[in-house]
Length: 176
Image (cartoon, rainbow, N blue to C red):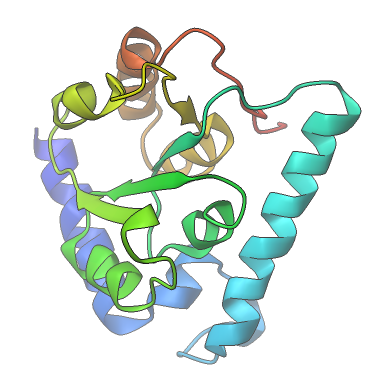
């Protein structure tokens, strides 16, 4: 639990000081130099690239709902909401989630949640979908965010996600 508290404190601080750069740390953008439209456009391009990658390999997400772990300020979840009916972004940082909610262009189709627990119990009711279709998890971004910080914590989340995500889980694992 100390790991989570430390991570939460770090990301809350980053969310207050330079949130966009903390999410996408390009050297020339440090010091709050990201323009919002430019920042969110990088998310749209990345999601389009991932979906194209999956299509070329005949891998198609099977659900209409996406659960993105480590969503930060919503760069990818906003882009995902352009392709899926329902997107849930989760992060342990209150400050990051507050920013994500403020910049949400998709209303109730894209919801943000703070989860500062070392488990995914918050999502158990959510993934047992109303229509039985299940949820597609974005493992690629989980790995990107959590692997930088704490591989043990990522492994714990990934193991739990396998138990709550419906069959047909698809994602594009991070290379390297």
